Image 1 (cartoon, rainbow, N blue to C red):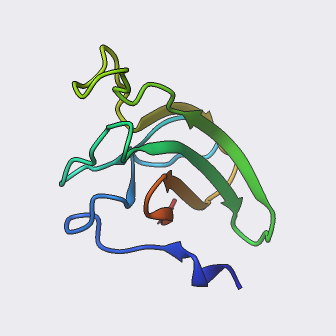
Image 2 (cartoon, rainbow, N blue to C red):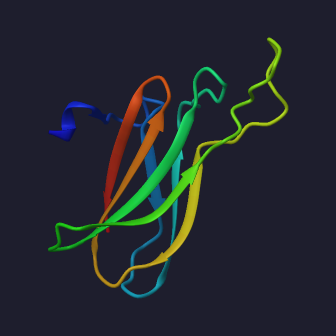
Length: 124
């Protein structure tokens, strides 16, 4: 069973939980969706501790099939050849505009290189 290794918590108290934000849903209309890790408590973005990727899925009401809407891999983690942070880093934020034909549920997953897989969901 997946639930043994997929973690979730209240995002206001846990920096690893992906937070899904979007406006009001209207079938067939564009919907801007943002998924952020570290919304309330910033997640470190270092070579030693970082979010590797975020994925966003949609499950249409009445369906058991997940459709991947977007996936973003974060490559710059302030790595360097010295003890000092490197010259570039990426923040764990995914933004996408989608059109969905029916209500359903959005699912976000995010992977931390130290703390594993985290998930959240939002009903549309």
